[in-house]
Each structure stands twice: as structure tokens, then as C-alpha cells.
Amino acid sequence: MSLSDVPKVSAAPGDLLPDLLRSDSGTIIDQADQWPARRAEIAAHLLPLAYGPLPPTPSCTDCELLHVATVRQLGGAQLLSCRVRPLGMDSFTLRVFVPPGTQPCPVVLNGDGCWHYATDDVIAAVLARGLVFAQFNRVEIAPDPQVPTASPPPYAALASWAWGYHRAIDALLQGRQQSNQVALGRIDPQRIAVVGHSRGGKAALLAGATDTRIALTSANNSGAGGAGCFRWLGPGAESLADVTNAFPHWFAPALQQFSGREQALPFDQHFLKALIAPRALLTTEALGDTWANPQGSWLTHQAALAVYKLLGVPAQLAMVCRPGGHDHSLADWHTLLDFCDSIFSGRARPRGLDVTPFPDLP
Image (cartoon, rainbow, N blue to C red; front, top):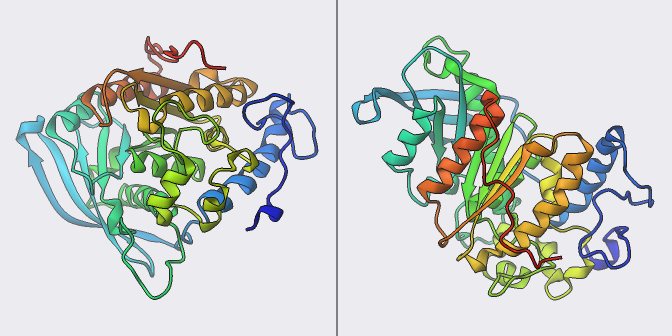
């Protein structure tokens, strides 16, 4: 896609970001029933240019049970090691921790096994809320950094990793139907959350934007190409040029041509967030992680809120900023679990959501 092929986006004069609620023809979107058509426009602008196509959805995905263990240090939770086998495609491993009991459970799915597998403290916190915890290693699906080959891979890494979330969900839902996987039968298919950190947060956002089975999406410190804003960079923030020069394999090749000309982009990252609406979305940021552009993330959060309000579900969107740096801390996990409780179990909305630490931003 060249610059001349990029669709023009209507925005009111002086607007910092492209207008989510103004169609390409200039129509103001002020009714919820207008949103599906506008959503399709947004997807057409954003997905091919930024991330490229996702790998195809296989006709079936099997969940092969490899091993079952009882983990005493996690209160007797069951650990299931599974092999996710999309038909005709490479397989990957999925580890699933199921709390004791018989009741249906929400599941939190994480793709950051390549960075490090979640600590016992994190897993214990998830299980204590009555949630299943599942994790896979996204670089089993697409390597990072990209291995040099004679021809470029057909799919960008973020698209492949988002696809991995989708196939892991396939496997969890297929596994719950199998008589030899009683523990997976407790997973509630209506209460599936995905989460990732940093580049994994970018992948989680893309996964949530492209699969409506995901009821709650969460991204932690996801930065440029994730929750961060391309047009607004806080002090020390990663730019479009920074991220596409360092990691060109993450994105569609066409995105790099907008380095230094971000105002010509037909979208910003509030478009990605809006594709998740009306389903739940939580972004968590660290104030000391300036490279991940928490200021820009706040702006895209505020812009996406207009869609959630239009659809009558503003409580489904949340953002939390904490002190500290670029890590997926236990505090971040507790923030996510508090939000899961409110979305999945009808508990009170947690305090401290949507409190801006940037009162001087536009």
C-alpha cells in the first residue's frame, strides 16, 4: 500500500486524532446501530496497513493432552500440559492451571511464555479469584527476532501472535468437549480474557480486536503499535520510526513509510481499541516507562471512550497508571483481576480506574 492508496479520514479542524465517530463520507455516527458499518471502515483502514493479514483460520484445532499434574504449592490446582494442533499448521504448547472445585470458571490467557513463564505468585493470585490461568509461548508461532530467510514470511509477527491467541482459545474450547479433559470442561466460553505485556500487549490488543470470543482484553505497557499514540509522544517515548526500524518484522511493511509523517496515517491506536468495543478493555501503564508512552496511551484511551459511551457501556473500558517501570508486576495482575471480577462476576467496579496523571494533556 502506497501513500496515494491510503484512504482519507475525516477529522474536525484542530482535532488531535482522527475522529472515530465520523464516517469516511463525513457522516456523524451518533446512534449505536451505525457502529457496525463504521467499525468495518476502521478495520479496513487499520488492520492491513499496520499489521497485515492474520494467518488463515484452520478448519479445526485439536487439543492434545500431554500431561496432568496436581500442584500442591498452588493449593491442589491441576496443571494440564496440552499441544495445540491447528490442522495443517505448526503446533505449540499450552499450559493450563485449573483451580480446585466444580463451578464454571473464566479463563485468563497469556502469550508471554517466551519472556518467562508466570511466577507462582501470579498463578496463585489468578487461581485464588476462581479463574483458570493459561499460557503459551508466542515465539513457537513466529520467532522474534525474525530468522533470516530467502523470502520474507507471509505474515507479520504481531499478526501471527494474535492468531496464536485465537488458536489457543480454539484448543481450550475443543478441550472442554473431550471426556478425558474434565478440568477444561469447567472453562466458561463466555468469559475469556487475554493479556500480554510489552510486545505481547500489542499482540493481545490485536487478538481482542479480531476475535469476538474474547470478552476482555488487557495490555500492559504495550507502547507504539499497542495502546500508545503515534501522533502524540510523551517525553522519551518510542516513535513509529523507532519501532518499525528496530522491529520491522512485527508490522506490515507499509507502516514504515509513515515514519515522520504520522499525521498522514488514516488511523491512530484509538482505532484499535475501538475495534474491541463493546467488549471489555483494560490498559495498564507505568509512569516511569516513558518509552511505552503512557501519555499517548491516555489520549487513545480517552478517544476510544467515545465509542464505548455511544454503545452504552463506558464501564467496559478502563485504564490504570501506576508508579514504576517496564515490567508486568504483581500489582498489574491484581488490577486485571479486580477488573475481571467486575466484568465477569458483577462485582463493584474497582476504585482508581481512569484517573489521569496527565491533567495538562489535551
